[in-house]
Length: 159
Image (spheres, rainbow, N blue to C red):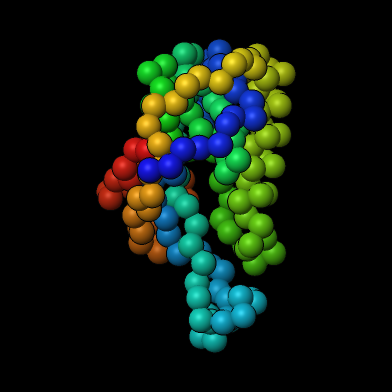
């Protein structure tokens, strides 16, 4: 296990807030050739994957931390896991290799709106319990929805 870089900002959850927790991954509709250029499925060397999310609700007492690599939700006891605030989008050819940066930008815009709306309040970052887990998210079937209200059958381990 390794540790995370320090939080850039932290926000206390003041009102229940919907967010998205990664619980799996599925193969996307983006195919690339050996040079990682867009390709037709029958000419592709690789098919890119994308995360699958479970819709959950953060509660007062939880804390969101903005860190390199994205947002994490931290419980009062210091347990944590990665989350998204913005509605996840499927990977597409145009943003195939900048998908994570686009998602981070989307999340920061949602954070600004939630702070302005009184759902989040900037605070000092809470100390985390545990390090970074290297376990990967389970692969789910091709037709699996991008966002679910209940966790996928193969459960992801908590960081």
